[in-house]
Length: 182
Length: 151
Image 1 (cartoon, chains in turn purple, orange):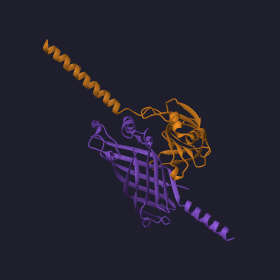
Image 2 (cartoon, helix red, strand yellow):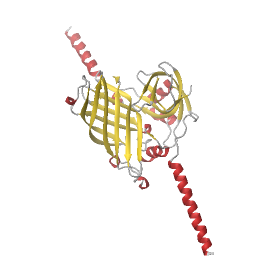
Image 3 (cartoon, helix red, strand yellow):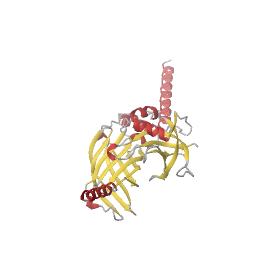
């Protein structure tokens, strides 16, 4: 009887922990490069993202070929010359909300949270720290963040002929509604 | 004679510069190729497509995903699991596969009116690959972009 009760408690605890993981497969990540010559924007709306409301774990995964540009040539250069998408098909973020006391997942509101983790782009992994916003409304969780990425940090080389067209640091915007539960 | 030669050289150079400028302009403003007007390289069911990637994603890539300058358009038949909009208002259609929680994730470029859960459709679009991360514990989707419903 004692073991049965312990087993039952373990199962309940596991279910509770599992219920704290929310995800989406259609989060959005866009980047924006601004120079005197031109502005470049690209969007990817098939980002897989996960948040664990109990541990603060945050994960993102996307396919670089999923970025869509207004101009076909830009998209071609992005995949072929800069990101080398066939060789490095994924970009990922593995990190966490570093201070869970800043957010109440059980109460409607908009919370600024510190986020830290490892961002892998073009096969290069670097530590990233930023502030994200978690929004809780009617039990639904959404997240957003904006941060800057220095292109050279990820060994992305831009040919000299385009160095005036592409910013050395691009703005990355993340927007996700974690509408599924694990 | 020298003046005539100089004129010919100058005109030739001018012609080369104009040609290069026009070519550059058209290349820079080249439109995306038409997915709607493309012939699919493969016709497959949603379940078969997903199974190919989940079984051997490297091999599946060679079959369904093009390279950077030659994207592959594929045609997929399947049953709609759900229809939703992303933050920018783009329609996303998820097609059922044989794996629970795993879909063919279609980001639409064409219209997607009167499409409901359970509807059987045929979608044409660019396959960009398989988004799966074992550490996340989420069933991976096969991703398609710039999709059109053709039936």
